[in-house]
Length: 84
Image (cartoon, rainbow, N blue to C red; front, top):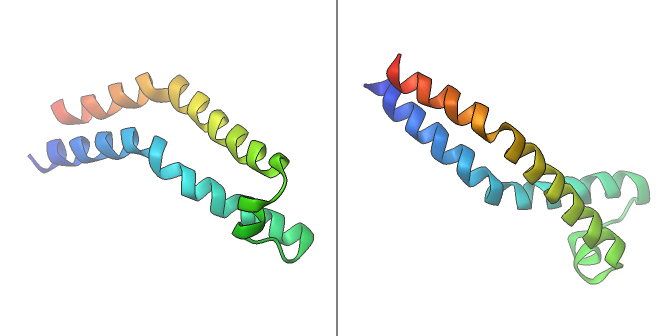
């Protein structure tokens, strides 16, 4: 019974990860750019060059592509957890 609820929760989190990953990508991008330039902030990302915005958008699109390719496998695996 607990495994069924856990698999439902994991399936919900998997589907919501397409939304939750956006702030994670932004924070990671700012942290990576901060290691290179030294004083890169979110404000510079928000008001800065479009290259930074396109880079974040491209990273999100890559995540969506990976998510879309692996969605069927993950959903099948989590559904198997419900019935085992």
